[in-house]
Length: 231
Length: 296
Image (cartoon, rainbow over all chains, first blue to last red; front, side, top):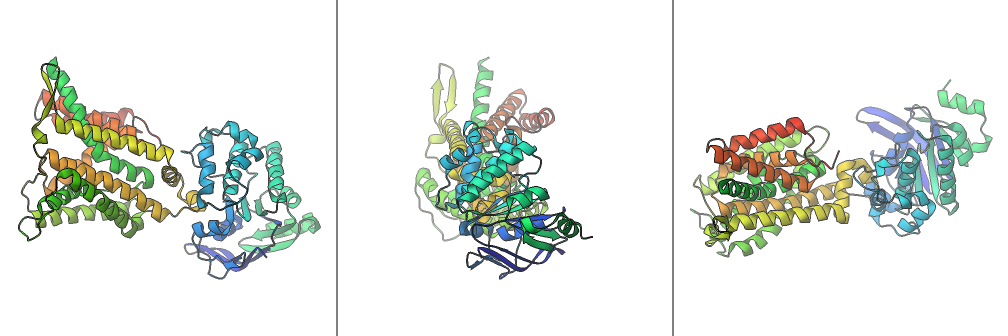
Protein backbone atom coordinates (compact mmCIF):
# COMPACT_ATOMS: atom_id res chain seq x y z
CA UNK A 1 0.00 0.00 0.00
CA UNK A 2 1.35 3.41 -0.98
CA UNK A 3 -0.94 5.35 1.35
CA UNK A 4 -2.77 3.98 4.35
CA UNK A 5 -4.61 5.82 7.10
CA UNK A 6 -5.64 3.93 10.23
CA UNK A 7 -8.39 5.32 12.44
CA UNK A 8 -7.44 8.83 11.39
CA UNK A 9 -8.96 11.61 13.47
CA UNK A 10 -8.78 15.37 12.88
CA UNK A 11 -9.80 18.41 14.88
CA UNK A 12 -10.32 22.10 14.18
CA UNK A 13 -9.64 23.34 17.69
CA UNK A 14 -12.17 21.47 19.83
CA UNK A 15 -14.37 20.52 16.89
CA UNK A 16 -13.82 16.96 15.68
CA UNK A 17 -14.06 16.66 11.90
CA UNK A 18 -12.83 13.11 11.26
CA UNK A 19 -13.82 10.11 13.38
CA UNK A 20 -11.47 7.27 12.58
CA UNK A 21 -10.95 7.09 8.79
CA UNK A 22 -9.47 3.86 7.40
CA UNK A 23 -8.26 4.50 3.86
CA UNK A 24 -5.85 2.73 1.57
CA UNK A 25 -4.39 3.30 -1.86
CA UNK A 26 -2.01 1.05 -3.78
CA UNK A 27 0.72 2.41 -6.04
CA UNK A 28 -0.65 3.31 -9.45
CA UNK A 29 -4.28 3.45 -8.29
CA UNK A 30 -6.73 6.31 -8.67
CA UNK A 31 -9.09 6.44 -5.71
CA UNK A 32 -12.02 8.84 -5.48
CA UNK A 33 -13.56 10.37 -2.35
CA UNK A 34 -17.11 11.64 -2.63
CA UNK A 35 -19.44 13.13 -0.08
CA UNK A 36 -21.63 16.11 0.72
CA UNK A 37 -20.20 19.47 1.82
CA UNK A 38 -18.83 19.23 5.32
CA UNK A 39 -18.37 15.45 5.13
CA UNK A 40 -14.66 15.77 5.82
CA UNK A 41 -13.15 15.23 2.36
CA UNK A 42 -10.97 18.35 2.31
CA UNK A 43 -10.16 17.84 5.98
CA UNK A 44 -8.87 14.38 5.11
CA UNK A 45 -6.57 15.81 2.43
CA UNK A 46 -5.37 18.57 4.76
CA UNK A 47 -4.47 15.97 7.36
CA UNK A 48 -2.56 13.83 4.86
CA UNK A 49 -0.56 16.86 3.64
CA UNK A 50 0.23 18.02 7.16
CA UNK A 51 -1.75 21.27 7.26
CA UNK A 52 -3.73 19.67 10.06
CA UNK A 53 -2.01 17.62 12.75
CA UNK A 54 -2.51 13.87 12.46
CA UNK A 55 -1.76 11.33 15.20
CA UNK A 56 1.77 9.95 14.76
CA UNK A 57 0.93 6.46 13.51
CA UNK A 58 -2.32 7.21 11.72
CA UNK A 59 -0.85 8.03 8.30
CA UNK A 60 1.60 5.67 6.58
CA UNK A 61 3.07 6.61 3.20
CA UNK A 62 5.58 4.58 1.24
CA UNK A 63 6.64 2.76 4.39
CA UNK A 64 7.09 5.85 6.54
CA UNK A 65 4.92 7.43 9.22
CA UNK A 66 3.75 10.90 8.19
CA UNK A 67 1.50 11.76 11.10
CA UNK A 68 2.53 14.97 12.83
CA UNK A 69 5.21 15.88 10.27
CA UNK A 70 5.45 19.35 8.71
CA UNK A 71 3.97 19.94 5.22
CA UNK A 72 7.50 20.52 3.93
CA UNK A 73 8.59 17.02 4.95
CA UNK A 74 5.47 15.50 3.44
CA UNK A 75 6.04 17.20 0.09
CA UNK A 76 9.64 15.98 0.15
CA UNK A 77 8.32 12.47 0.77
CA UNK A 78 6.35 12.66 -2.47
CA UNK A 79 2.81 13.89 -1.86
CA UNK A 80 1.54 16.97 -3.72
CA UNK A 81 -1.84 18.66 -3.48
CA UNK A 82 -3.92 20.53 -6.01
CA UNK A 83 -5.86 22.58 -3.44
CA UNK A 84 -9.56 23.30 -3.51
CA UNK A 85 -10.16 26.59 -5.28
CA UNK A 86 -6.76 26.35 -6.96
CA UNK A 87 -5.05 28.76 -4.50
CA UNK A 88 -2.63 30.14 -7.02
CA UNK A 89 -0.33 32.94 -5.82
CA UNK A 90 -1.90 36.18 -7.14
CA UNK A 91 1.32 38.20 -7.00
CA UNK A 92 3.17 35.64 -9.11
CA UNK A 93 3.02 34.98 -12.84
CA UNK A 94 2.04 31.60 -14.29
CA UNK A 95 5.65 30.53 -14.65
CA UNK A 96 6.55 31.75 -11.17
CA UNK A 97 3.67 29.72 -9.74
CA UNK A 98 4.99 26.65 -11.53
CA UNK A 99 8.51 27.34 -10.25
CA UNK A 100 7.16 27.53 -6.69
CA UNK A 101 5.91 23.98 -7.19
CA UNK A 102 9.51 22.87 -7.68
CA UNK A 103 10.56 24.40 -4.33
CA UNK A 104 11.17 21.00 -2.76
CA UNK A 105 13.56 20.11 -5.61
CA UNK A 106 12.46 16.50 -5.95
CA UNK A 107 14.00 14.88 -9.03
CA UNK A 108 11.80 13.43 -11.75
CA UNK A 109 10.41 13.91 -15.21
CA UNK A 110 8.24 16.94 -14.41
CA UNK A 111 9.83 20.31 -15.06
CA UNK A 112 8.75 23.54 -16.78
CA UNK A 113 9.25 22.06 -20.24
CA UNK A 114 7.24 18.87 -19.66
CA UNK A 115 4.45 20.78 -17.89
CA UNK A 116 4.22 23.17 -20.87
CA UNK A 117 4.03 20.12 -23.17
CA UNK A 118 1.12 18.78 -21.12
CA UNK A 119 -0.63 22.15 -21.10
CA UNK A 120 0.53 24.05 -24.23
CA UNK A 121 -1.90 26.89 -23.48
CA UNK A 122 0.17 27.80 -20.41
CA UNK A 123 3.33 28.38 -22.43
CA UNK A 124 1.70 31.33 -24.19
CA UNK A 125 0.58 32.77 -20.87
CA UNK A 126 3.76 32.07 -18.92
CA UNK A 127 4.40 35.70 -17.98
CA UNK A 128 0.81 36.65 -17.23
CA UNK A 129 -0.42 37.19 -13.65
CA UNK A 130 -1.84 33.84 -12.64
CA UNK A 131 -5.20 35.21 -11.64
CA UNK A 132 -5.81 36.80 -15.05
CA UNK A 133 -6.38 33.35 -16.57
CA UNK A 134 -9.73 31.62 -17.01
CA UNK A 135 -10.90 29.09 -14.42
CA UNK A 136 -9.88 26.12 -16.52
CA UNK A 137 -6.44 27.58 -17.26
CA UNK A 138 -5.92 28.35 -13.57
CA UNK A 139 -6.78 24.73 -12.80
CA UNK A 140 -4.10 23.66 -15.29
CA UNK A 141 -1.58 25.90 -13.52
CA UNK A 142 -2.56 24.40 -10.17
CA UNK A 143 -2.14 20.86 -11.47
CA UNK A 144 1.14 21.79 -13.19
CA UNK A 145 2.39 23.37 -9.98
CA UNK A 146 1.68 20.18 -8.04
CA UNK A 147 3.38 18.07 -10.73
CA UNK A 148 6.52 20.22 -10.53
CA UNK A 149 7.37 18.59 -7.20
CA UNK A 150 7.53 15.20 -8.95
CA UNK A 151 5.18 13.51 -6.49
CA UNK A 152 4.42 9.83 -6.12
CA UNK A 153 0.88 10.70 -5.05
CA UNK A 154 -1.27 13.55 -6.33
CA UNK A 155 -4.16 14.79 -4.19
CA UNK A 156 -6.81 16.59 -6.26
CA UNK A 157 -9.34 18.56 -4.26
CA UNK A 158 -12.44 19.27 -6.34
CA UNK A 159 -10.66 20.14 -9.56
CA UNK A 160 -13.94 20.32 -11.49
CA UNK A 161 -15.40 23.00 -9.21
CA UNK A 162 -16.77 26.00 -11.07
CA UNK A 163 -15.65 24.81 -14.49
CA UNK A 164 -17.71 24.26 -17.65
CA UNK A 165 -18.23 20.58 -18.58
CA UNK A 166 -16.05 20.79 -21.68
CA UNK A 167 -13.20 22.25 -19.62
CA UNK A 168 -13.69 19.55 -16.96
CA UNK A 169 -13.29 16.93 -19.69
CA UNK A 170 -9.99 18.47 -20.80
CA UNK A 171 -8.73 18.58 -17.23
CA UNK A 172 -9.58 14.93 -16.59
CA UNK A 173 -8.06 13.90 -19.94
CA UNK A 174 -4.84 15.59 -18.84
CA UNK A 175 -5.06 13.86 -15.48
CA UNK A 176 -5.45 10.51 -17.23
CA UNK A 177 -2.32 11.23 -19.29
CA UNK A 178 -0.41 12.05 -16.11
CA UNK A 179 -1.54 8.98 -14.16
CA UNK A 180 -0.95 6.67 -17.15
CA UNK A 181 2.75 7.08 -16.42
CA UNK A 182 2.30 5.49 -12.99
CA UNK A 183 1.42 8.44 -10.76
CA UNK A 184 -1.14 7.57 -8.07
CA UNK A 185 -3.98 9.96 -7.33
CA UNK A 186 -6.71 10.68 -4.84
CA UNK A 187 -9.52 12.70 -6.39
CA UNK A 188 -12.08 14.43 -4.23
CA UNK A 189 -15.15 15.17 -6.30
CA UNK A 190 -18.63 16.61 -5.88
CA UNK A 191 -19.68 15.14 -9.25
CA UNK A 192 -20.37 11.48 -8.43
CA UNK A 193 -20.56 10.29 -12.06
CA UNK A 194 -17.21 11.91 -12.83
CA UNK A 195 -15.67 10.36 -9.72
CA UNK A 196 -16.88 6.87 -10.66
CA UNK A 197 -15.63 7.18 -14.24
CA UNK A 198 -12.18 8.53 -13.33
CA UNK A 199 -11.33 6.14 -10.49
CA UNK A 200 -10.87 2.43 -9.91
CA UNK A 201 -12.01 2.54 -6.28
CA UNK A 202 -14.19 4.93 -4.37
CA UNK A 203 -14.85 5.99 -0.77
CA UNK A 204 -17.90 7.90 0.36
CA UNK A 205 -17.55 10.15 3.42
CA UNK A 206 -20.47 11.19 5.54
CA UNK A 207 -20.11 13.43 8.60
CA UNK A 208 -16.46 12.53 9.16
CA UNK A 209 -16.79 8.78 8.68
CA UNK A 210 -16.43 6.36 5.77
CA UNK A 211 -19.97 5.35 4.87
CA UNK A 212 -19.18 3.29 1.77
CA UNK A 213 -16.18 1.93 -0.09
CA UNK A 214 -15.74 -0.34 -3.06
CA UNK A 215 -14.79 -0.69 -6.71
CA UNK A 216 -16.14 2.31 -8.65
CA UNK A 217 -17.81 0.30 -11.40
CA UNK A 218 -19.50 -2.10 -8.94
CA UNK A 219 -21.33 0.44 -6.79
CA UNK A 220 -24.95 1.18 -7.66
CA UNK A 221 -26.65 4.56 -7.69
CA UNK A 222 -28.83 3.57 -4.70
CA UNK A 223 -25.87 2.38 -2.63
CA UNK A 224 -24.09 5.66 -3.26
CA UNK A 225 -27.06 7.89 -2.54
CA UNK A 226 -27.76 5.98 0.65
CA UNK A 227 -24.18 6.41 1.80
CA UNK A 228 -23.90 10.03 0.55
CA UNK A 229 -26.94 11.36 2.39
CA UNK A 230 -27.01 8.89 5.25
CA UNK A 231 -30.67 8.11 4.83
CA UNK B 1 13.68 80.86 -7.23
CA UNK B 2 17.01 79.36 -6.38
CA UNK B 3 15.84 79.05 -2.78
CA UNK B 4 13.05 76.74 -3.91
CA UNK B 5 15.39 74.60 -6.02
CA UNK B 6 17.62 74.32 -2.97
CA UNK B 7 14.59 73.38 -0.83
CA UNK B 8 13.57 70.74 -3.34
CA UNK B 9 17.04 69.22 -3.44
CA UNK B 10 17.35 69.19 0.35
CA UNK B 11 13.92 67.59 0.49
CA UNK B 12 14.85 64.88 -1.98
CA UNK B 13 18.06 64.08 -0.10
CA UNK B 14 16.18 64.00 3.20
CA UNK B 15 13.61 61.76 1.55
CA UNK B 16 16.35 59.31 0.67
CA UNK B 17 17.08 58.93 4.37
CA UNK B 18 13.42 58.42 5.19
CA UNK B 19 13.22 55.82 2.42
CA UNK B 20 16.13 53.99 4.03
CA UNK B 21 14.33 54.03 7.40
CA UNK B 22 11.24 52.66 5.69
CA UNK B 23 12.71 49.87 3.53
CA UNK B 24 13.16 47.46 6.44
CA UNK B 25 9.63 48.11 7.62
CA UNK B 26 8.28 47.70 4.09
CA UNK B 27 9.91 44.29 3.85
CA UNK B 28 8.53 42.99 7.14
CA UNK B 29 5.09 44.48 6.62
CA UNK B 30 4.95 43.21 3.05
CA UNK B 31 6.08 39.64 3.69
CA UNK B 32 4.42 38.81 6.97
CA UNK B 33 1.96 41.64 7.66
CA UNK B 34 3.73 42.24 10.95
CA UNK B 35 3.55 45.76 12.35
CA UNK B 36 6.77 46.32 14.23
CA UNK B 37 6.11 49.17 16.67
CA UNK B 38 9.76 48.98 17.74
CA UNK B 39 11.09 49.55 14.22
CA UNK B 40 12.39 53.06 14.92
CA UNK B 41 13.89 51.89 18.19
CA UNK B 42 15.78 49.14 16.39
CA UNK B 43 17.20 51.79 14.01
CA UNK B 44 18.42 53.79 17.03
CA UNK B 45 19.71 50.57 18.61
CA UNK B 46 21.68 49.99 15.41
CA UNK B 47 23.03 53.52 15.64
CA UNK B 48 24.12 53.07 19.25
CA UNK B 49 25.60 49.67 18.41
CA UNK B 50 27.66 51.33 15.71
CA UNK B 51 28.63 54.07 18.15
CA UNK B 52 29.71 51.51 20.76
CA UNK B 53 31.61 49.38 18.24
CA UNK B 54 33.77 52.41 17.46
CA UNK B 55 34.04 54.27 20.74
CA UNK B 56 33.01 51.74 23.36
CA UNK B 57 30.40 52.25 26.07
CA UNK B 58 31.05 55.46 28.09
CA UNK B 59 31.18 55.04 31.86
CA UNK B 60 32.01 51.34 31.66
CA UNK B 61 35.31 49.67 30.97
CA UNK B 62 34.21 48.50 27.53
CA UNK B 63 36.30 50.05 24.78
CA UNK B 64 35.45 50.09 21.12
CA UNK B 65 37.44 48.90 18.17
CA UNK B 66 38.22 52.43 17.03
CA UNK B 67 37.78 51.58 13.37
CA UNK B 68 36.38 53.93 10.75
CA UNK B 69 32.62 53.97 10.07
CA UNK B 70 32.81 51.96 6.83
CA UNK B 71 34.67 49.01 8.42
CA UNK B 72 32.41 49.23 11.45
CA UNK B 73 29.41 49.03 9.15
CA UNK B 74 30.80 45.83 7.60
CA UNK B 75 31.07 44.31 11.09
CA UNK B 76 27.68 45.59 12.24
CA UNK B 77 25.58 44.39 9.31
CA UNK B 78 26.17 40.62 9.66
CA UNK B 79 25.62 40.95 13.43
CA UNK B 80 22.34 42.72 12.71
CA UNK B 81 21.29 39.95 10.30
CA UNK B 82 21.94 37.29 12.91
CA UNK B 83 20.09 39.30 15.54
CA UNK B 84 17.11 39.77 13.24
CA UNK B 85 16.97 36.06 12.38
CA UNK B 86 17.10 35.07 16.04
CA UNK B 87 14.51 37.68 17.02
CA UNK B 88 12.04 36.48 14.39
CA UNK B 89 12.61 32.79 15.01
CA UNK B 90 12.64 33.09 18.79
CA UNK B 91 10.12 35.80 19.53
CA UNK B 92 8.17 37.31 16.64
CA UNK B 93 7.18 34.08 14.85
CA UNK B 94 5.09 33.27 17.88
CA UNK B 95 3.10 36.48 17.52
CA UNK B 96 2.00 35.93 13.92
CA UNK B 97 -1.51 34.87 13.10
CA UNK B 98 -4.89 36.23 12.13
CA UNK B 99 -5.00 38.51 15.17
CA UNK B 100 -2.74 41.59 14.82
CA UNK B 101 -2.74 42.25 18.57
CA UNK B 102 0.04 39.90 19.76
CA UNK B 103 2.62 41.38 17.37
CA UNK B 104 1.58 44.93 18.29
CA UNK B 105 1.78 44.24 22.01
CA UNK B 106 5.09 42.35 21.87
CA UNK B 107 6.83 44.90 19.64
CA UNK B 108 5.46 47.71 21.80
CA UNK B 109 7.07 45.96 24.76
CA UNK B 110 10.32 45.65 22.83
CA UNK B 111 10.18 49.36 22.08
CA UNK B 112 9.98 50.20 25.79
CA UNK B 113 12.75 47.73 26.65
CA UNK B 114 15.11 49.08 24.00
CA UNK B 115 14.59 52.72 24.90
CA UNK B 116 15.15 52.14 28.60
CA UNK B 117 18.07 49.79 28.05
CA UNK B 118 19.77 52.42 25.89
CA UNK B 119 18.96 55.10 28.44
CA UNK B 120 20.46 52.97 31.20
CA UNK B 121 23.64 52.13 29.29
CA UNK B 122 24.32 55.35 27.40
CA UNK B 123 22.37 57.97 29.40
CA UNK B 124 20.24 60.58 27.68
CA UNK B 125 23.24 62.54 26.35
CA UNK B 126 23.03 63.05 22.61
CA UNK B 127 25.72 61.07 20.80
CA UNK B 128 27.04 61.15 17.31
CA UNK B 129 29.24 58.90 15.26
CA UNK B 130 32.34 60.63 13.99
CA UNK B 131 32.04 60.96 10.25
CA UNK B 132 35.66 62.04 9.95
CA UNK B 133 34.83 65.44 8.54
CA UNK B 134 32.55 64.27 5.76
CA UNK B 135 29.53 65.71 7.53
CA UNK B 136 30.61 69.25 6.79
CA UNK B 137 31.78 68.80 3.22
CA UNK B 138 29.71 69.86 0.25
CA UNK B 139 29.62 69.62 -3.49
CA UNK B 140 28.95 72.73 -5.56
CA UNK B 141 26.18 72.51 -8.17
CA UNK B 142 26.53 75.42 -10.50
CA UNK B 143 27.39 78.81 -9.03
CA UNK B 144 25.09 79.30 -6.08
CA UNK B 145 23.95 75.85 -5.06
CA UNK B 146 25.68 73.41 -2.75
CA UNK B 147 24.79 69.87 -1.83
CA UNK B 148 26.08 68.24 1.34
CA UNK B 149 28.31 65.23 0.61
CA UNK B 150 26.90 63.09 3.41
CA UNK B 151 23.22 63.66 2.47
CA UNK B 152 24.13 62.88 -1.13
CA UNK B 153 25.87 59.65 -0.10
CA UNK B 154 22.85 58.69 2.04
CA UNK B 155 20.51 59.36 -0.89
CA UNK B 156 22.59 57.26 -3.28
CA UNK B 157 22.82 54.43 -0.74
CA UNK B 158 19.04 54.55 -0.29
CA UNK B 159 18.63 54.34 -4.06
CA UNK B 160 21.04 51.40 -4.23
CA UNK B 161 19.22 49.63 -1.38
CA UNK B 162 15.87 50.11 -3.14
CA UNK B 163 17.21 48.75 -6.42
CA UNK B 164 18.70 45.79 -4.55
CA UNK B 165 15.42 45.01 -2.74
CA UNK B 166 13.39 45.20 -5.96
CA UNK B 167 15.89 42.89 -7.66
CA UNK B 168 15.77 40.48 -4.71
CA UNK B 169 12.00 40.34 -4.76
CA UNK B 170 11.36 40.17 -8.48
CA UNK B 171 14.30 38.15 -9.80
CA UNK B 172 15.49 35.70 -7.17
CA UNK B 173 14.15 32.40 -5.87
CA UNK B 174 14.13 33.79 -2.33
CA UNK B 175 12.14 36.83 -3.41
CA UNK B 176 9.63 34.58 -5.12
CA UNK B 177 9.32 32.58 -1.90
CA UNK B 178 8.74 35.85 0.01
CA UNK B 179 5.97 36.92 -2.39
CA UNK B 180 4.31 33.50 -2.35
CA UNK B 181 4.38 33.40 1.46
CA UNK B 182 2.89 36.89 1.63
CA UNK B 183 0.11 35.83 -0.77
CA UNK B 184 -0.97 32.55 0.79
CA UNK B 185 0.95 31.02 3.65
CA UNK B 186 -0.81 27.62 3.56
CA UNK B 187 -0.40 27.21 -0.18
CA UNK B 188 3.28 28.13 0.24
CA UNK B 189 3.68 25.49 2.94
CA UNK B 190 2.10 22.98 0.56
CA UNK B 191 5.00 23.68 -1.79
CA UNK B 192 7.40 22.51 0.90
CA UNK B 193 8.33 25.93 2.24
CA UNK B 194 9.33 26.26 5.90
CA UNK B 195 7.56 29.47 6.79
CA UNK B 196 9.37 29.91 10.11
CA UNK B 197 12.70 29.96 8.30
CA UNK B 198 11.47 32.19 5.45
CA UNK B 199 10.07 34.77 7.87
CA UNK B 200 13.33 34.74 9.82
CA UNK B 201 15.30 35.32 6.60
CA UNK B 202 13.07 38.28 5.76
CA UNK B 203 13.65 39.80 9.19
CA UNK B 204 17.39 39.16 8.93
CA UNK B 205 17.50 41.16 5.69
CA UNK B 206 15.27 43.85 7.20
CA UNK B 207 17.66 44.21 10.13
CA UNK B 208 20.59 44.69 7.78
CA UNK B 209 18.65 47.63 6.30
CA UNK B 210 17.76 48.83 9.80
CA UNK B 211 21.36 48.76 11.04
CA UNK B 212 22.48 50.45 7.82
CA UNK B 213 19.94 53.25 8.33
CA UNK B 214 20.86 53.53 12.00
CA UNK B 215 24.54 54.06 11.35
CA UNK B 216 23.81 56.67 8.69
CA UNK B 217 21.50 58.47 11.10
CA UNK B 218 24.25 58.42 13.72
CA UNK B 219 26.73 59.80 11.20
CA UNK B 220 24.61 62.66 9.93
CA UNK B 221 23.06 63.87 13.20
CA UNK B 222 22.88 63.19 16.93
CA UNK B 223 21.09 60.17 18.37
CA UNK B 224 19.32 59.76 21.69
CA UNK B 225 17.61 56.73 23.21
CA UNK B 226 14.14 58.25 22.83
CA UNK B 227 14.47 59.02 19.10
CA UNK B 228 12.92 55.73 17.95
CA UNK B 229 9.18 56.53 17.82
CA UNK B 230 9.78 59.62 15.68
CA UNK B 231 11.62 57.54 13.10
CA UNK B 232 8.89 54.89 13.23
CA UNK B 233 6.38 57.51 12.19
CA UNK B 234 8.38 58.61 9.16
CA UNK B 235 9.05 55.02 8.14
CA UNK B 236 5.39 54.09 8.46
CA UNK B 237 4.23 57.14 6.51
CA UNK B 238 6.70 56.44 3.70
CA UNK B 239 5.54 52.80 3.46
CA UNK B 240 1.84 53.71 3.46
CA UNK B 241 2.22 56.54 0.95
CA UNK B 242 4.17 54.25 -1.36
CA UNK B 243 1.91 51.24 -1.15
CA UNK B 244 2.46 47.81 0.36
CA UNK B 245 4.74 45.38 -1.41
CA UNK B 246 6.55 47.92 -3.57
CA UNK B 247 10.03 49.11 -2.65
CA UNK B 248 9.99 51.80 -5.33
CA UNK B 249 6.75 52.90 -3.73
CA UNK B 250 8.44 53.12 -0.35
CA UNK B 251 11.27 55.09 -1.93
CA UNK B 252 8.80 57.47 -3.59
CA UNK B 253 6.92 57.76 -0.30
CA UNK B 254 10.12 58.73 1.48
CA UNK B 255 10.96 61.34 -1.15
CA UNK B 256 7.47 62.82 -1.00
CA UNK B 257 7.69 63.01 2.77
CA UNK B 258 11.15 64.60 2.67
CA UNK B 259 10.12 67.19 0.09
CA UNK B 260 6.91 68.01 2.00
CA UNK B 261 8.85 68.56 5.20
CA UNK B 262 11.50 70.61 3.44
CA UNK B 263 8.92 72.85 1.79
CA UNK B 264 7.11 73.14 5.10
CA UNK B 265 10.32 74.19 6.87
CA UNK B 266 10.92 76.83 4.20
CA UNK B 267 7.45 78.29 4.71
CA UNK B 268 7.79 78.40 8.48
CA UNK B 269 10.22 76.60 10.82
CA UNK B 270 7.36 75.43 12.97
CA UNK B 271 5.50 73.83 10.07
CA UNK B 272 8.04 71.42 8.63
CA UNK B 273 7.07 68.20 10.37
CA UNK B 274 3.41 69.14 10.33
CA UNK B 275 3.28 69.63 6.56
CA UNK B 276 4.81 66.18 6.19
CA UNK B 277 2.01 64.66 8.27
CA UNK B 278 -0.63 66.68 6.43
CA UNK B 279 0.59 65.39 3.08
CA UNK B 280 0.44 61.86 4.51
CA UNK B 281 -3.18 62.36 5.57
CA UNK B 282 -4.08 63.78 2.16
CA UNK B 283 -2.49 60.76 0.46
CA UNK B 284 -4.46 58.45 2.75
CA UNK B 285 -7.64 60.19 1.71
CA UNK B 286 -7.14 60.36 -2.04
CA UNK B 287 -5.23 57.09 -2.54
CA UNK B 288 -5.39 54.83 0.51
CA UNK B 289 -3.79 51.84 -1.18
CA UNK B 290 -0.67 53.89 -1.86
CA UNK B 291 1.10 55.10 -4.98
CA UNK B 292 2.24 51.71 -6.33
CA UNK B 293 0.60 48.89 -4.37
CA UNK B 294 1.79 45.46 -5.44
CA UNK B 295 0.34 43.02 -2.91
CA UNK B 296 -3.34 42.56 -2.23
